Amino acid sequence: MKYKKYFRKTSLKQKGHGDILLNEIIKKKPKVFLEIGVFHGVTARNVCELLYQIHGNEFKYIGLDLFQKSEENISEVIPNTEFKNPIKHFYFKYVKRKDPYSLESVEDLLKKFKNNIHLIKGNSNKILKKIDMKQIDFVFLDGGHDYDTVVNDLNCCKEVINLKGTVICDDYNLGSAPGVKRAIDEFVNKNKFRCEFICENRFAKIQNS
Image 1: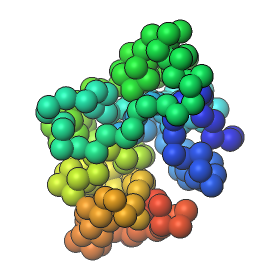
Image 2 (image 1 turned 45 degrees about the horizontal axis):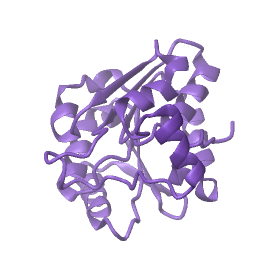
Image 3 (image 1 turned 120 degrees about the vertical axis):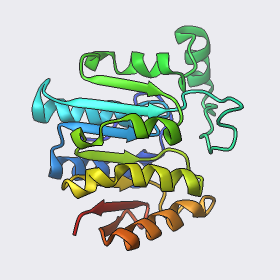
Image 4 (image 1 turned 90 degrees about the vertical axis):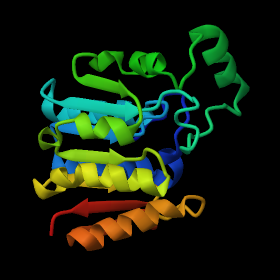
């Protein structure tokens, strides 16, 4: 399966990184997948298409994101939602009449799998503590890039790893967000987890030793 863009913005199309992520998911064949940081929903759609191929309708995708800019999340790093392509800009503004970063727009992109998805709007610092992580067997972590946020998200995912699940963190080597690397390194060393670096250290795959 090839990673598709679905006419939206995604950095995972670069250098085939999206395909590599999908291959990692194929290895584990998770039935309950959590993505922290959904953005436009491109990765969500690709993951749902893949899990449907593997499990049919017997899978669940959970997506958590801010889905908007506000005073509450002003300190978080939110990706640039503006399109450089004028055709895409026109399409979303005048045809779809939806902000591609909005919850409603992502729901529309994933409507094919409406019975398998659960999208949650909110800050991971508050929401993750309320999710039963025992049911989740794969996490793609690409939410807030602030050090404290990454620490929170990883600590909330600890149970997933202890139960033989997998956590893949995006942007491990992102120079503009050094807190990501620091938080991951500290988390792995403290808990003595095994960490593998993929795609020129873009991804950090964390599993139990």
